[in-house]
Image 1 (cartoon, rainbow, N blue to C red):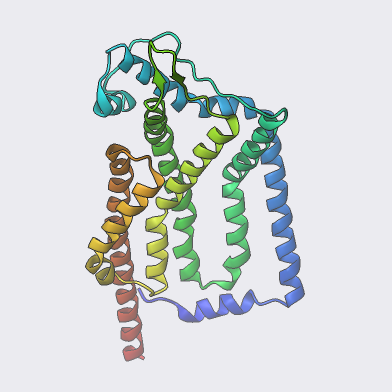
Image 2: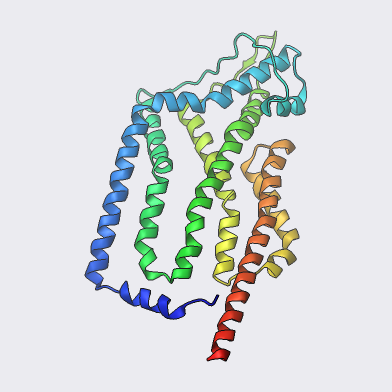
Length: 300
């Protein structure tokens, strides 16, 4: 079945409008986006204590594992990995509830404001993404609209996968490593980790964004493939450089232990090779469309 280019051109012509109409449409989309963010902010701020407590779960888990190691129930980073993955359990140890502090009167209030702002963007991302798509879609060819739609689903799904890896695996490793730097013994010297509520939120949001954006690699490479900027042969030829770059990025955004670096590097490397397959499928489909178009021209 050949592609109907005449219909595509007709759709584009039908979507043409004066500049003023485009500005009115843009204003309407922006109003919807701002209203969605305001509603999301209000909801997240209302439940900000509960959301912050949820974000403390990795800290609580890290504290339990650290206490279990001190009590001899777990040993080393691999036992930590087994506990995080649910392959091993540790008995509850007293005194493992995480303690955070704030040193300014309104510090926790402003921390809740930042948390609500971050949560509002995450919560309303589907609305924001759809408004952007609805604004640019009339100027796209039909095949471009069909090709763009899957990315509206793939981008948030991949971001959630990266955020889940941070929340359930990476954060417990980071916090356990931080707790292991303490000096807590029988001597009079005590060096304890008492993080500030604002610093903890900064750590969590930074890791969530870093991993969520790293997991967008297939989306970015596939879009570049659609635009003809990269091709599967180019990506396959440069896979060694890509692996090296992934390892370097993982070393920067993760704590200085090999396990958490591997936990980020391996999924990103796998996603890179998945991206090569996606770009190859795009090239095969494009070749088929060109062949069908050539057949139609020859028939005419």
